[in-house]
Image 1: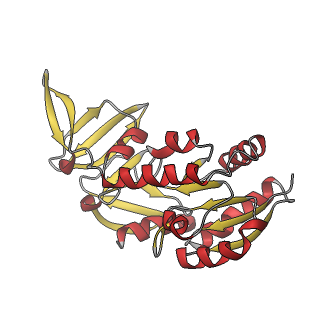
Image 2: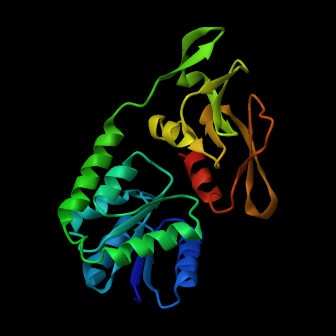
Image 3: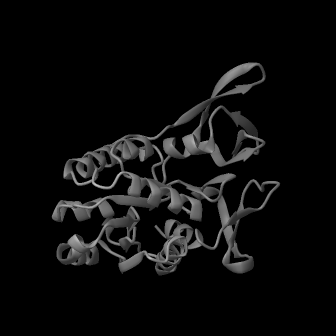
Length: 256
């Protein structure tokens, strides 16, 4: 079934990549319009929402959170969010029948989202479903983040303050926390769960292996093929590489 799609994404290269991948999955799909701000999205959707079947949307835009769009207009189409933030909202999101994809997205992620939409067409017309997600996300933003993890140390359990952690790292399904004092502790959690629990202002998910603390970053090198190399202290055994697709988001985070 051909779909008319709109994209709200403030990084032009990511919007282009998303459009290309959607067309690669099914060349009958049509991207009607790409928007980079809340203001632009409100203006376009006010006039054209009825033409659109599906909306792909980033959460953090240059002029605020994309949920603000729905404070002005009433959405009548399903939304797939593509973002690096707030994995904890995933379950609440899916209960409402709308998908969530973590950046950097992969082609199978989009295929699954499109398949889910096609299987449940007609179930996403209630604005209350969108509003319940907005309320949940805004409530989540207002909550406090984890301040410490309980870790094993010399046959004891000690609280390890999150402010002491320079970076989290996963290896062979075990997650470690590296501290300012150059000590390493095992954390009984996945990186996905940790990302849900710690402040997105202070920490960034660089890739599938690393979450880095802002204050740990010494500098950033340009790496091969548009990627970035993050230099941190203490220095890890493996390089912390940010992909080309995620590099604009990382630079935006560093500049906030």
